[in-house]
Image (cartoon, rainbow, N blue to C red; front, side, top):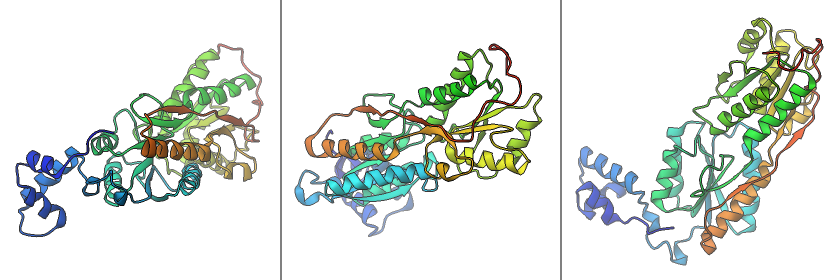
Length: 345
């Protein structure tokens, strides 16, 4: 895991004494605001944390794992947390949970809070694994972590995920084989989720496979609940879509509500499919057709691997779990006569 940064390194980087760094960290003594900011920047750059001193001693272990999720509103993350908590308890740990609200800037602050609470390791989901400042911060802090949901792009980070491109390609491909030739997509903000980008790529691949041209993708916030305006826009296109693919189940549910508010019936007038596999989708009428992520299992596997890293120094690894399609009632063959394969959207 590498050597943990020391308070002396912080002092050297900030150009001050160790005593000054200590005063800043403890909030005691007279320190100018400029010096306080300089020391704070040095702490962030080095990844220094007070609790990492003596980290190898048994007395320094807190028995706590940190968990950072993008949102606590989306049930898919609650499912993952359930698996995380179950595996943590089995390993003799408790968890400390926080969220970033899909804001990359908030990820660093949230992780800082978790580290200040002396978590021994983290399970987390970030906006974009390839550009995450939060992961750079963790790397400098030498605190082991395991990502969930983020795509497996590097062997340097431990990741438990699914193949988002293949899953999106699979479910949109089913729509194409049903006879749909005009398939729209509503996606969550691409800046807030690398998974959204991958699902869009899978959507586009499925249409190309079917000889179709992808339509422009509508991007919305992940917590968007009122999609009536966007549904109205889609229907105003000539010709309008016969099916809608959404990058999350929560957006698909909002899309169903939006079309219903405009007088359309699902799936008689338009099919709607989602991605995630949250349980509430099965309770709807019509039930939601979707990609099911094994979120609880992903959370459990992430903690099991994290404990291997903590207790046995196991190396980082990527684990891609299988997904499945749930054949709900929200999709059907289009009512209109299907055009021949190759007809553009």
